[in-house]
Image 1 (cartoon, one colour):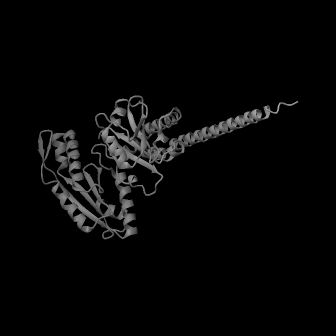
Image 2 (cartoon, rainbow, N blue to C red):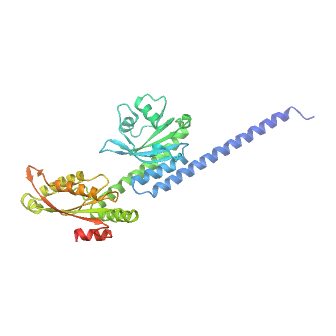
Image 3 (cartoon, rainbow, N blue to C red):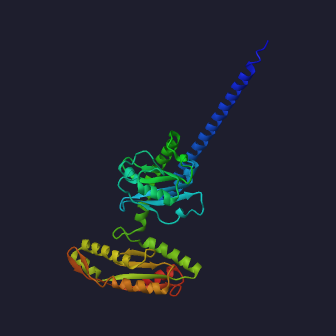
Amino acid sequence: PRDLHSFPTRRSSDLATALDGAAALIEANRRYHQSSALLQLARALATAGTSGEVAQRLADAVPLVVDSDRVAVYLWEPARGELVRRSINTRDADDPVAEGDLRWVPEPGGPLEQLLNDPHSDPVFIDAAAEHPRVREELDRLGDAAVILVPLATEDTLLGVLGVSVLDRPERLAPNPDLLDRLSGVAAQASTALQNGRLVDQITHQALHDQLTGLANRLQFADQLRKAVNRARQHDEFVTMFYIDLNGFKPVNDEFGHNVGDQLLSALAKRLVACVRATDLVARLGGDEFAVLITSQSSPEDSDIVAERLATAFADPFRVDGHVLRIGASIGAAVFPVDADSADGLHRREIG
């Protein structure tokens, strides 16, 4: 006769096998989607150009790899000694944290200092129990329940930091081996892309800036003038262009040499930049020719103020390499649409 008592045991065994199979299928499906997300990230980063584009594509792709509510990418600016947020991706379309310019300066004992000292350290997990008080304050200000900071680095240099945060259930970012493995893959791809992006940044900057003064060059000025005129035409606004031709610069070169002349041009560039708003553009068109573009978000009164400031930039002498030098300038102005109805027209009126 059959052993009837063996039926429940067999059914239990079959159920356990089925559950194990379902769990394996779920795990395989999860790994498939994870691999697909990493591949998608690799493709997105491969087609990015500047470091800013890399940062944005990284922020957009990370939520596909890691369960998160907000992803931000900060790039390290050595000259300023701070991290600057270059991109953010958040699930909340009205997230107030997404607005504005966010900068992060390292503090003694803080996580950023830790990453700077050891760019290849493990990701730093921060929640309400964080020891550093400034970190806890920042966590509260941003509304994060937890954040994990992932260094993006070359062999010995910090390029930036990937910040992945959740607004609730901080255990979602608990640094388990699986999460760290995913973040490691993301960081490796992003670091390589950022290195390439920095090279693109450098090449782009050189193509659009005067190498001596650091000002915009003729190419960039012409492009920005065209864009400003197009915006002004659409919104019925003004655009003012100032053309500055130096008087007395050639004798300086002849008497003191080109090195002193170059230093004089650099000093003048700084004065001109100080005369305008951050949104305006100062350019060196070549030789001893400069130009200033007052953006379309301005009034004729704004232009008058800038004109007065530009004139006073030449009032005081320049002290260069032990020499006291005075130069003057002929300053002309052209206004769209009063003096010309196109960017080329403004350019020809002043420079031609």
